[in-house]
Image (cartoon, rainbow, N blue to C red):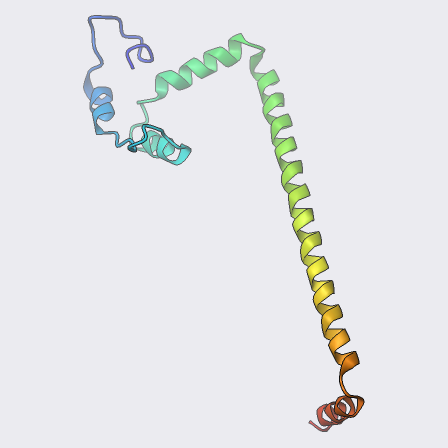
Length: 127
């Protein structure tokens, strides 16, 4: 924490930042999922400000903002393509199931007694 806030020994973090570190509720496995991180950031916006500042400095120092923006866009396009492929696969599987269901129903009607089919047909016409 001292490194993030650029505090050198023997100085320590003071004020709201220190209080916010003590108020954080971290799960028993000492891992923070994104939703928890987002909640911490919403509750204590200044807590992670040094980390975000460091990230901006690193982006500018290594390859620049344009390169990272393209890289993010490229990765997002790959992710979107995988998701679209998976959705097409699911739709194809669903369509196949519907065709099989329709074939089963059609075959049941074909094997029905012809007279019952005709009676059923007349019955439907009378209503």
